[in-house]
Image 1 (cartoon, helix red, strand yellow):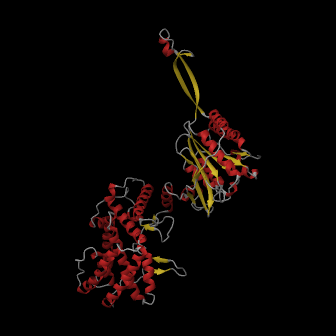
Image 2: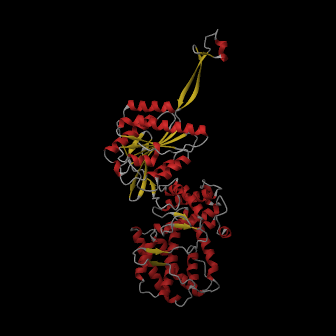
Image 3: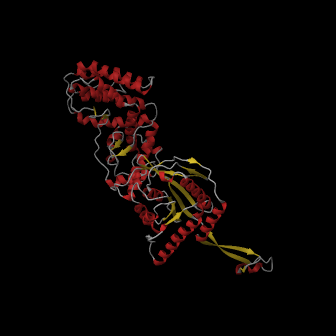
Length: 561
């Protein structure tokens, strides 16, 4: 492959713009997919996902790449990455220009065509569409990448054409090769005569790309052109040998959907399950779909895991907060915060500072004070249950809790995050409730996927040495997605303190059974400071006892509320 790319004249253009690279296999393969997705985004919208073979799906809307092309050489060489960009751009342009619709219209016009003749006609449509998108790509720099991919593909096809001088497969091969240089000859008069007829269509394909009327109109023009071209060349190619007797397009049985087969590239290598999972997890950290992150923790074969997605479906609110309650909560936080010793020197009173006694006869500033100030330097995440059962008065109470805790935690050196989770059409949605200093809200709906929401919140917390707390606000048990115990165990493994506020819970015994002593119930808003103090005391004192015993804190089950 490297030899073919060098023979095609690879320029290594990607070395000028691709900066996220790695020598670690999973990271490099993930970075490569992210870069290719950005390139495909410049082609157009809805061009499909891009995946390595062996990843999550084999959907026809996915552009599947062979990882065997680049595996073992990291970072990926620029010339090889140029080739990958060319493949992706070529496939993305097929989707942007609706090649599927061209195939469908061509199929409708050839229903009564004999099978052998239809196979030959498919080769004309297949090659014509490749030439069309190659012309289309020349409008910008992406055409250079497509040119490289085309040259490599044509060189790969040559050994399969055999020694037969005249065949339909060799004809379409020369048609695509000579489309950009019509002076090139096939070397056989019989084929050159047909190529001259095909080149009449080549000029029309170039002009169709600039035709008015939209993409549907361009598809109709191309489908009509291929039929007219076939009528011209059919008498000349009758009886020619066909090396590949497979249909390149056919409708799915019992469905109006179609199955286009545009690429003849055979995938030689598939990623291992573990490597594919690592790549999907790294990609999920920067995408809306975070299901791979959940599966990494809950298990790839866990049947309870449901799709999970980030979605900023929120709106600003202006909640009313009580300054006295904010002060009470801040006092609780300062009471349980670690202390940092601060020395204030050069004072006229206080304790004698032996290092400044020489100042006594000068100005008397030879004293100092020693203070132990609270150091509020925590990572805190508010995780709010926004399921349908929270609607109404409960949700207004939750909004007040979030706004009050945001004001109480804001300032100092704390880093605060807030997320709400709900379910829509079988998908667990996670939405941010903070935008700078603004508090946001979301409409409660769906079921309660607490286990997966806890895992997601823990994943997105900063990975530093500061204490990490997840304050989980909910009104009932989890009834959707993976088990809550998986999320609780994950927090323990990551040394994250998980505490739960039960708001107007009906079945308290079930909640205690699920969350243990790490839960405190609220019947009205005024109980918030006391609940926070109880949970902090239980958490931090339990941590201190565990550290003194030389072990991690162990979750205890409570027998009563």
